[in-house]
Length: 289
Image (cartoon, rainbow, N blue to C red; front, side, top):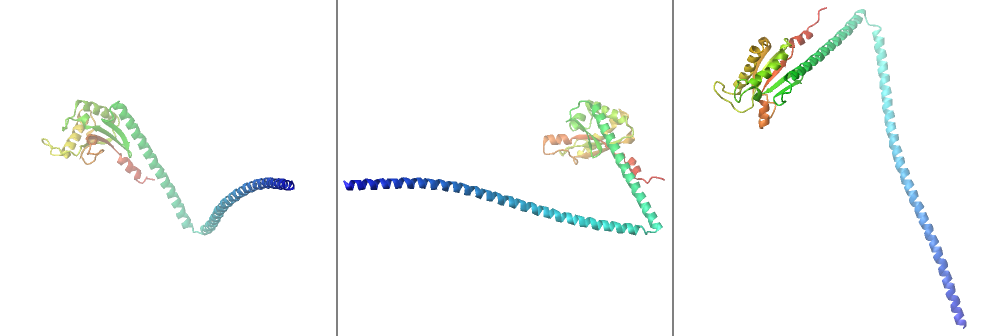
């Protein structure tokens, strides 16, 4: 009986001790988790502080570099100011002839500036006249297909490109009836500005050509140009002294001769409104006082 009581007391004590140890362990484990979480937060804060410090160091370096640059600029301005002051001191003791020479130089600079402004004004006026001419030509030809006739300004020069299928029969320099109508509309605009001079250029593709008196594309391009010129002169009364005819053969293409479309674009007649060089040269002449 005594042995049973002893055993019961021993077992009870062991169970009580085990229960207390488990609670303590759980408490310590919870404390550990809290400390670990706090430690992780501190580590993150430390990392953030380090990143912010690195960014501040970078900005400080940039500001220091900018400060050094501004110091150099200030020093440069000081030197220029001192140099300017010295030049003013030197000017104060120049001779009368030197002062007159400087005055004349300044006057020449003013005249050159006026001259440049005059040239710019004349060029602007020329560009405006060219644009007006283009608009008049486009209005005159109406709703012609852009593939058949193209009017444009390029580098201050007006170009009128007319395809050969509109002007001529295949392999011929005989002008078609429809071409005569188109040329009449163009001639009407040109006739209203009798001071204009222009050149009619014939262009071909690079396909070799020979027929009758025509031995190559040079002959064909020239004959097509003179055919157009002749109509403008005889039928529409344009001054022949203001007209020039030229053949370009295949040597000034606008498209690739390797394709049908390119060769078709190259076969064309171009009317070039010539720049008024005499008026430009007059601007270059010294003005009489």
